[in-house]
Amino acid sequence: MQRIYEPRDLLEAEMLIGMLAGEGIEAFLTGRHLVGAVGELPVSGLLGMMVADEEAERARLLIDEYNGAQPLPGDEPESYPGELIC
Image 1 (cartoon, rainbow, N blue to C red):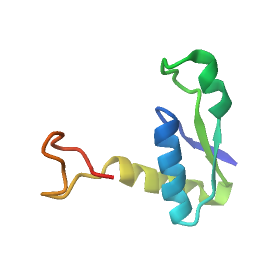
Image 2 (cartoon, rainbow, N blue to C red):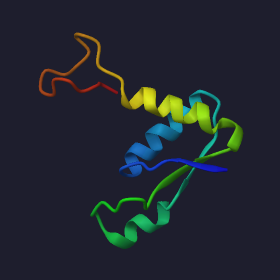
Image 3 (tube, one colour):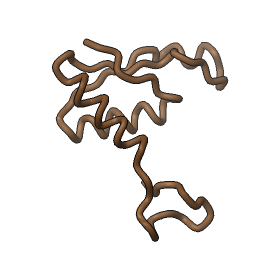
Image 4 (cartoon, rainbow, N blue to C red):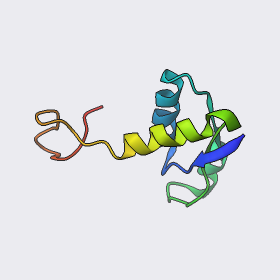
């Protein structure tokens, strides 16, 4: 197993785990149960996404592509220009 990404929060982690599952990659989240111990303040490095060694490179590529995605014209909400609609 390799740690491939540190999500900002549980919401981002669950979204990325679902995206990877849709691509046939099983991902695990470490640190999920530690989040409540620090309250709502963000703590760097607390959460980590893990995948099997043989899927690590592909999973990193998919996450990088997702994070670099730009909205298509007309697919962004008027109140949040530049944001993707999920």
